[in-house]
Image (cartoon, rainbow, N blue to C red; front, side, top):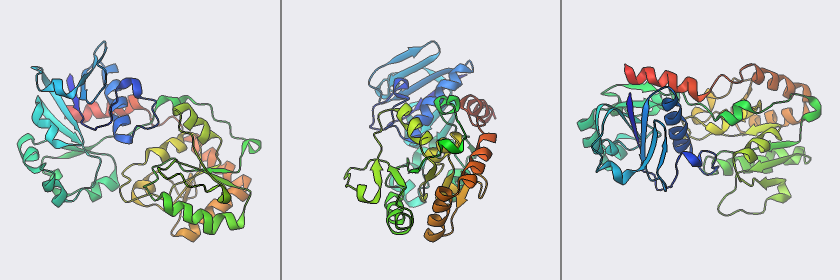
Length: 331
């Protein structure tokens, strides 16, 4: 099939930026999904705010401005977020991948209603929490699911489960605006006072306040390999969750590297953790702190959760996701 992806984020990126740690989930998804669809013998075009054109056999990256001049007709057109982008393309079937839970008022305010009624796209959702929260209007023409996956570098990374390899480090790799401040408060008030031999590696913020007196340090975020190493050097992933968190790629990456997760289960985090098997879903901040301290203080508990995670490794890769998504596109 001839498939077209359209995206208009201001951030300049292309396939060559796939390991850039500054990329968000939507951009990472577009890169990995589109490339793996091309590996399945589809002709795939991406029109976005790329800084440089790219042509790899049946895989094409072009600037979005070129779409207006393009005379190509596609079998499938997929908007990455903004439904208005579908007005720019001629295609037999149209889809829109949703990355928000915007209420109907915002949907109308962003002038997406007329484009939605005109193009009649099927909406692609990324989880059950997302489905439950998305407004009913987006389901008129139908909806389906995209099974998100993680980069092969995480799948191929060697994982060693050994008590002697356990560290005293916790890590937070999600966005700071996803309840990062809540995590810092829990750490300062309810964790460090009871074990001052542990440390938290945190996603850098614009302010970068010095929190070293609470054993909180910032990640360097050089590249994906640095992220993988930071995760493998950590004993536990701490991620409260957020109402806007529809999947939490950060948690999925930690799971693949067999890092137990402690969460408050806000947003989609309940879908990333099996309580008492791959991590803990706390009912409140006190439980969150208790589970974190338990994992620091009990080596056997930590090792058991890591072994449970190891059993489900390599179950979530992009080629399988692309295969499943291809079936959705052909329905």
